[in-house]
Amino acid sequence: MLEPADFDDEPDEPSLPQDRLAWLRHGWIGPLGIALVVSLLVVGLYTVLVGGGGEKSPQGAETTTNPSSAAQVATAQEAIAGKAMVNGTWRCRLQNESATNGDMLGDVLPDVLVVPAAGLTYTWNDTPGTYTISPSEGDRSGSKISRVEFTGGPLAGVSADHLLSEMNGGAAQGTLYLAPVANDPSKPRRYCYVN
Image 1 (cartoon, rainbow, N blue to C red):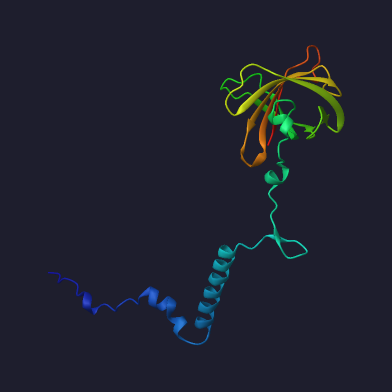
Image 2 (image 1 turned 180 degrees about the vertical axis):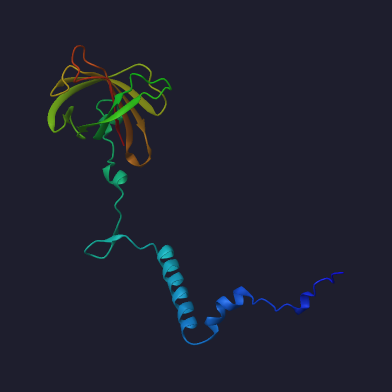
């Protein structure tokens, strides 16, 4: 008959965590490793809390490089009154003709529309032009709808619906729907946006 095994006779296996950390108690490598880890944690925490990474101007003041706020300019009073398009740099997209999910926005176009703060002028890809603007029916609270007719320059003959929505900070958001020109594939349906 077999007797049950006596587990007390077997040698104890060494505890792995104690053996792995035993080198920390002897010599100078352990304290040096701990000091290195602690110093890296302190430097990392200091960098996170203080911020760092800002560019310094020659006078020593930090400058921020936020492209969206740098591109935003105060909207001219003529635009707020509906007598001009929202001034600023506009980017355009094609209208998605095959949209089935309601997403009317297609590909981003390389074209750039720039509207100055004064006068009824514009530039389309650095080529100047002129336009007229007149109020349309359907203004809502906080927004104005206008009809734009491009009378000169690269967009001559194109009509558009202009929507201005006021924003905080003196800048207004503008949306422009450029109607297509019949028999001119270079002037399809496009949506343009500013701010």
